[in-house]
Image (tube, rainbow, N blue to C red):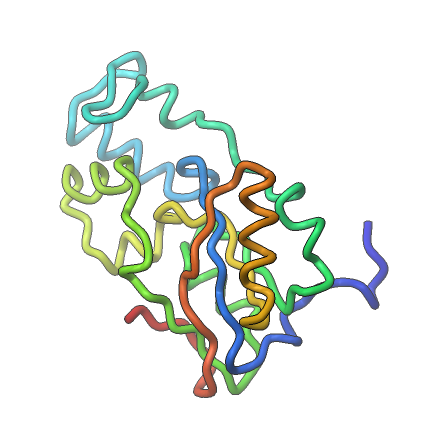
Length: 181
């Protein structure tokens, strides 16, 4: 529970903020219908089949534990202008929800390597880059908008909590939206 005055709604996000990505541990809550269709129907795998190029079975892959970001974010919450948990709708569908009018998020699509699970799903399912972005988290479980001077502290807190992180992009003035560059 949090007092309304302490809630982080994203209204503090301003042009110049940095977007820090916190890594996901798999599908989380994204795209299970499409993933199952690709793994079972297109690839012909069974629940106990090993997934090519991955360390476990289909069951292991689909049931990977959802990453908690509590320990990574608690030490730096006072620095955070906004956060987006990347669930159904992918990065565009979730990040836009916290952006105030007058700013756009510019995602550097080259700032991270697509995790093997998502690369496999894209290739085996012949899924377009746009659909991948709209359906899956692509390895990004949480996006945190902070002043540039606080990005290092957010990444250090994530590292301390055992969560991977990287600079995903920036916020700039413009029409409210999410763009991949």
